[in-house]
Amino acid sequence: MRVSISIVFILLFATTFAHDLDYYFEVVLNITKDAGEIINEKIWQVKNVEIKFSAVDFVTETDREIEEKFKREISAKFPDHKFIGEETTDDGEKMQLTDSPTWVIDPIDGTMNFVHGYPYVCISVALLVNKETQMGIIYNPVLNQLFTARKGQGAFYNQKPIRVSTIKELSEAVVSTEVGLSRDEEKLRVVAENIKNFVPLAQGIRSVGTRAMNLAL
Image 1: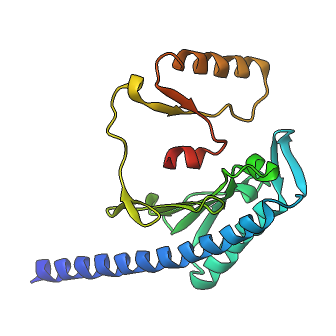
Image 2: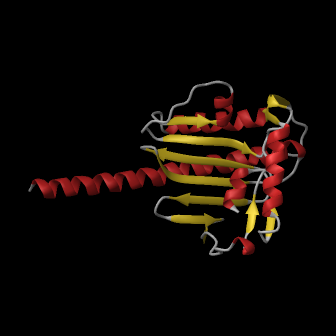
Image 3: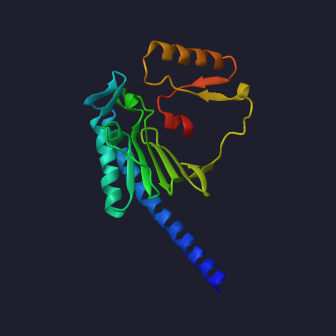
C-alpha cells in the first residue's frame, strides 16, 4: 500500500511540476516578446553607453531596463524565484545558484551590435530548477527569430521543430566563433592563430557578435 501511495505522490508531483513549467514558460515568453519591442524601438536611436571593463565592453540603459523588467514582472508572478542577470552580476552583486527556480538572463546579448544598429542582437533567458536547465529562450526581435527549448520537449524556431545538424565532418561544417572582448596582444594573437588554423579545415567561418545566436543558429 505504501508503494502505491508513493507512486501516486510522485505522479502528482510530476504533473504539478510540469504544469508549473508550462505556466513559467508562458509568462516569460510574453515578457521576452514585450522586451523585444523595446529593442526594436531603440536599436535605431542614439544610445547612452557606459563603459564596463574596456572600450569594447559596455552597457546601455536599455540593457538595464530590460533586465529590470524581467525581474519585476517575474517576481510579481513568482516571488520565490531567483535571478542571475548579466548586468547586476557585472555591477558587483554577488550571485549564487541554488536549487530554487532561478532565471539566468542576458537582456541584450550583442550590446555592441545594438549600439551600432547591427541587427544581430538577442534576449537570452534560461530557467534552472534544482540546478538543472528546464527551458531556454533566445529571441532576436529585429529579425523576428525566436528559438525556444524545453527539457524533454525539443527545440523550436518560430514554433517549428528544429534539431541539431547531422554533419559530423569539420570539412563540411560552418564554424561559429567570436574574437571576444579582450584586446590583450597575446590573447588576440592566440585567437587569430586559432581562426587561421580552422579556416582551411572548415567549410566556413562565421561571427555574428552574439554567442547565444551563434549557438541557436
